[in-house]
Image 1 (cartoon, rainbow, N blue to C red):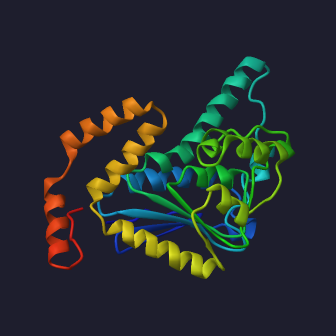
Image 2 (cartoon, rainbow, N blue to C red; image 1 turned 45 degrees about the vertical axis):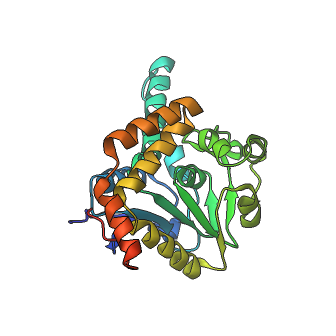
Length: 271
């Protein structure tokens, strides 16, 4: 498998786990336009690689992500004297930014966010699109957009209320206050806390290796079914999973799972 080259992301692959690390530490991993582009490219590429069983999303440097680069915001200017044309151009740009994080949800394999220190604005948009989230004890989350005169428009307002109680999500979004790691854990935004970044990455890698050792067909299907069920009624979700299992359930993987259990060994699944 040939890993593409990226300028602002570090990408490593080992033991069926892909680690994607934001690598703009001098700017606290603030998201400039090239980073948005690379982010979309790496997840679209990962989705096509059958060897990849899980993805870890992390950040280099002092903070996980400081949000959208303010220079990028300042660089957004009108392209026409016509307000309608400027509005359409801005809408298309926002939709493009949304797609750069929606690729996390659309990636077939589970994506695990490893969050240390600051996770601000666009960083929250990013991690709410992941499947699992773990953080350091000093992590701080902030839906910052209202403090800079914006409406969060890249996923937080849509995904956060599906992860924490809606009233809590509204309070975080409207006050733009700093939310501690302990509070994020209490309300279910993250699943577990670690003392520091080193232990966080070690713990998350252990989780990722555990996911990578399971049937890839079952893992991909579980993500697909849960994503579908979130947007549909219980009845529709039940119908969907019944149709999915009737058509795509892997008898080969079931046999291997049972055999491995009886033989007291780790199962080996085809990619």
